[in-house]
Image (cartoon, one colour):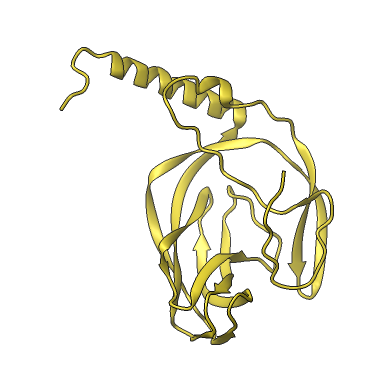
Amino acid sequence: KQAVFLAVEDGKIEKGDLIGVINVYYVGLTGVRSIIEDKVPERVRVVYRKGEKIIRKEVTVEPFGYVRSPVARWEALIADETRELRCGEPVVVKVKKIRVPPNTVIYPLQIMRHAYGSVADIFCDHPPWKVEEGGEIRKVVFLPLLDGEVREGELLGVLNFYSVEISPIGKVRQWLNNWIDEMGRTFAEPNWPIW
């Protein structure tokens, strides 16, 4: 169990620090019910910056899942400052403020990027927000692929905003089972496929 961590400054990761969250998508039409595992809550440390200080706060992370809308909206990440870039050295860049509504997950639109590099992630210099609470994006981590400059007003990237309904993992399993049952009935129709 390993992860690649892109540091933007010197520091230390300690055992028990939460370094990220991944999405696991379940695909397929057979045997899906058994792959959603029961998970127990875990104690972890959320690590964030507050001014010049690094804060480590112990929290309990409850297992959860979500159902995502198939429709997204795009939000442009526009530089709100000019920054010099050096190839391969991540830099934090201020962006025009973007409000993230409650119950929204964000994914980068990978085909939209700046000529000198890509946005690797959003940057929080405040406590991270919960998905169900929403928050604001004011800075991003930019990974330059070439030496150059990002200028104020330039497009750095685009984010997809998806509305979600969050629930404990047991309810997500129930949603999935209901969907599988419905699809099973649909595929069993004598007129399937319809085209």
